[in-house]
Length: 431
Image (cartoon, rainbow, N blue to C red):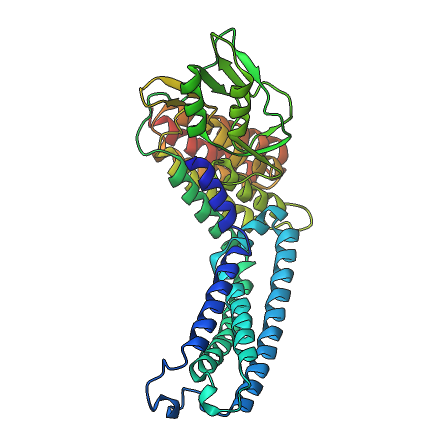
């Protein structure tokens, strides 16, 4: 249940409407409170220049003007946001749009403008009494302050969006989210079973019954169901995999058979959707960075510097991964009995996900291949086992081979050989 709740919370937090909705509700509640408690101001406070002290007609005209201006600014904010999202989808990739939408500052700015409009609407419709004593002085003053705040926030928002579409800032933000995912998913202590073992003979295979990407898996529910049925489950897929309706997705070692109720409960523990999510997918952020590099290396853009920035940040993320053990493959019940064996990624898969496509796209670019070799060399001090060292050595061999086949100049090939030799020596010195 905890995994499922975390997944839904991340989807909710990444939506563009959740924070504005909460802020709008708070604004309406504030307006109602200020309108129903008009005696909150102490005696003589109306004479202060910060507090509105005009007649009802002037207050109504003021609220109408502020409402009209705020709606205009909100239209401008929405237009700017759509333009930036269009540029981000075209230059950085459509999957990066999620990072812009889920940005807390973007959500807060949109929420402030929508909340201000609703606040002004509620206050505007309540003004109109002939008596000065019926004027909500504090409510009008707060509405004026909110409108002025929106004006300054608009300037901040334009500055933020101008910086948000810079490649270096996008790479930094994606890397920050990847690091947060690593901290959340990877344990800090070694697990008794860090690599999955194959299922035994005679198991019952179950298909998940839906097409799509596995967004999250409720492992607590699977352990609970396996304990109740006295079975052991082998999960052959993991979050981020695309599955078809039928397939060998889950193996059930059930000596007394696998009832339909257990099959339905197992399928219900999987959340399958149309896109990958970072909830339990360690490679999600890596592939986002790789997509930025691939688009930068495309013939239409040919931005080697962005690809180099991506390689540097991928090396940084891999160093954090190498300092931690991988996710535990074994999940036991409360009695310590093995109930679920899950499919987990390994160091080889993570290194290949980070470097393979960039190496293939930049096989004729000496600067890219040289930086890949330097990135591998920088990871040498973080390798602790042969399981970590082997994929780096394999990647070095592929980088050098790509350079020999794709680089035309002898000088550039010699420079790449020196970098690869240096990285190999650093890795070999740790054996």
